[in-house]
Amino acid sequence: MFSLPPFVCVSQTKAASAIVLSYNEADDTVLYVPIDTLKGVVETTKKFFKEYHTTDFPVKRAAGHYCAETTRRPFDMATFRELRKLTTNHLMPEHVTLGELKRMVVTIFSKDGKRIRSVTPLDYFPTTERPKESEDMATAAKKPAAKKPAAKPVAKAAAAKKVAEKVVTASAKKAEKLQAKPNKEDSGETRGRKPGAGALIRELILAGKESDAILEAVKKQFPDSKAGPADVSWNRSKLKKDGLLK
Image 1: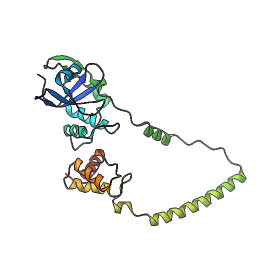
Image 2: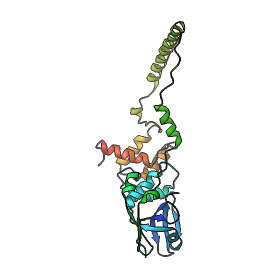
Image 3: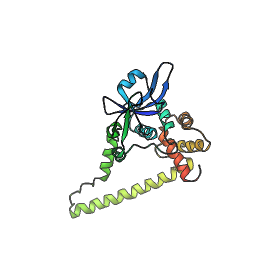
């Protein structure tokens, strides 16, 4: 008989891993999350163990790696909540680093608990690359601007005059906008989020609410908000850093 969940498994047919969350003895099935889909799957133990071997890989580190993967590709929210319970809740989920995987030696077991072999789990915990759009933006920011050919003296004077006029006009417009624009800090607005969403998250954290309840309240009050579990974790960490939360 295999050990009771949760535990980490590796595939016998491909470079992939899975976390078994629970076992239903009544119908002899397991609920598990494969790294390639990040969605819960129910399967009979007979069929499951034809595909996977159990290991002694640390469950918390595997769950943290899976949760970190949800920031880069689609996932199932119910499954994310179950995985999050297996991690250290006060820390942001982190990928298992390449260095860790190279140093680790994991033992693989059969269904009945017999040792099969030891492996380095390097290939079983892939890390999805960040979206290409973000990489292109970062590259563009680092790339120096191309130099323009030097202008002739007369053209330089005319160009300088135009630039001076544009600067004066832009400064005047900017001053008008600053006078008309409300203070974001006073209104509780957070960049990239509906005004007040960040303040609401922090308020609910201090009130002792769980992440699911917080996100539900934010979605109800700010339907267009894109706040997610990572935003709740960030605000929780900030409150702790500021000494407002133990």
